[in-house]
Amino acid sequence: MVTISIPINLKQEKFIDYLVKSGKVANKAHAVRRAIDLMAEEDLVERVLKSQLEAREGKILRGDLRELVKQF
Image (tube, rainbow, N blue to C red; front, side, top):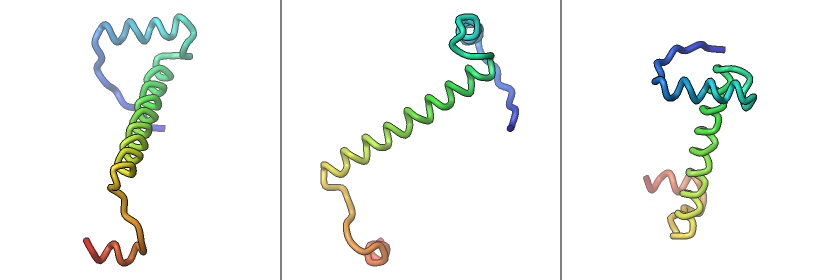
């Protein structure tokens, strides 16, 4: 596991302290890891939704992958 050090503002620190005190997270590190995991999940959902929209708009490639590569 890698350790990183980042500056946070007082408002962020107080929120993390609240999360720990309320039992929503085990400790400060857990709060940050959970936030990163949630952001990664949100990014994945956004990419899936974008892909679905592009598919509905007909922006989808069909056919043999080798032939499609030749077109690019």
